[in-house]
Length: 334
Image (cartoon, rainbow, N blue to C red; front, side, top):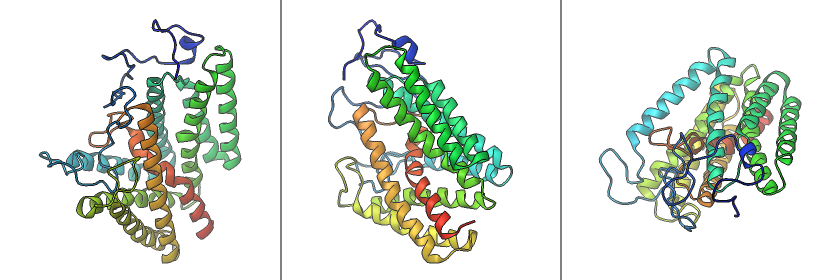
């Protein structure tokens, strides 16, 4: 992909990008704060390092102290997971608006990580406009419903396209496409959380969505370590079909129990939710892997020890959010 001149000049670059990453050894741009590229492969590499710790990972080399064979720092990963879980549960069951702040903070950081990652490939996104649009989507969805979510998203996209238009023609499609993608993934998709939360039993619905998705990660992780033999995809070579089976089993059991006892639905309905989550979560992981491989980075960031960046944790959640919202609305309508 063509970039601007070596001195950083070029039509509109100084105006379009809210943040220009500094140069790093080897001549590639790197992001500030969040450590991008976190562990990028060589420029043009067809096989940059894979994110460690994805569900269904094959056993790798001999384990280091405190690490399981996939390379994930398990104690750190567990600690971070517990802390995030406490923040989610504590805010969900106290003041719902407080959870919205947690959502905005988490997804907002994810948006910043994506913007910096795109800058590695000379794609520039006005991060402040995307963040403002995301806040409008969250507020509109929670207090106004789906129409307001769609309206806020549409205005965000139109603003981004118009803003870039005044920065010059060169690179317009490249930058506009990256901006629209960021507005959809993660911003628009995350806007379905307040739609789910706005119901009287919204906190329980959000817990089901998060818990079943987390079970996909846990089930796939340990099943892959213990039984993983058959690789699933060249996109993520450490994923295995045995790990995927572990994800399905964990999700089906968790979904059946939570839907039955939190929403008073049927066991089979929860099992369907779990099976769909397992498939969508795996696809979400693979999509994120494709994005990172194309950008030549290992992780979106390094904010979370043992996990990478926030987007490295949000990928499965974003992929399962809309299907869970829709299935729960059909199975257990309000």
